[in-house]
Length: 407
Image 1 (spheres, rainbow, N blue to C red):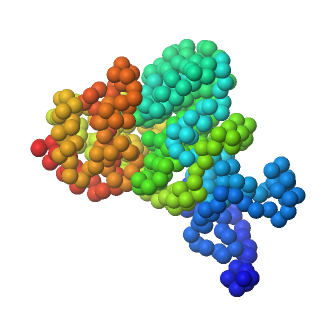
Image 2 (cartoon, one colour; image 1 turned 135 degrees about the horizontal axis):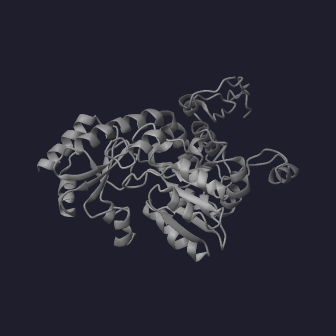
């Protein structure tokens, strides 16, 4: 049938705003690519490939003479909407989406290094990130050094050897260690290193690493961006030079592609991310303050508490404490397990950044791949639990914790 029968009419695009819109507006509007049908909801293009009007157009498309989608492993209209929207929220030049957070982490570093190169990283990080840096990269002849804390002299010493990449996870998972992004970036740039920040725990709502001197940001978009337990996804953001000279050639041929459906879910989720993250952070602040008063708790690690060792830095670097709390019980692991098992609202799960409040025992779940020595070096004792605070009414969450402690 003809396009007219189906009501298809080309839509003339309206002029873009001639002012810089707020990131929250970008979260709803940026990257929008309406089809000729003028739909209000973003279109979902579930297509692996694309057609060409002629053999010559195919040639021109593959040689970048014309702007044409080629294959969804390379790029896809729905994925592009997510990438453009997240880049606008972040204030980055470009974004590349991937199939998971770890594929984003791996690709962000692997696209930069080769045998003989050196990587410096913050010592506290998610276990899979630790495995990539300390086990996988050395197999390819890439050396590494881990730096603990924020001593400029320690970072300068680590960077005295020619360094290709600096990888920072801040706040760290699970005990929310904070790294001074500006200080480390300044030192790294003096030796020509590229600074990559894992910004998962803060999200683009509460921390802007590019504004603090970092070159690249990576995310598990599974967390706060979707934040509703539905999909796996990752994202890498940076400059035109980094993305086009290093990252795109790597991901194009290794294929860590994000599915169009998952990208569509994320496009819609970004619209509410600001509200969700800020409410979750407010809830977490109240719960962290409550937990500090419990006799069963030895320490509470939360960037919004004055008791956090890097509280002053967190106040400068972040606009909120985040949704995650590190908790160390005064007793043993069995005491933590008793409380976890007595919870009625809060779920036991190894995910985080979710709309539902979740609790896990890192030493036996998320970080069990690490040796006891490495866990201890990160402060992950058998009595540590991680609480990811969601969107439930905060008084109900506190009541649930209270009854679990009493039980």
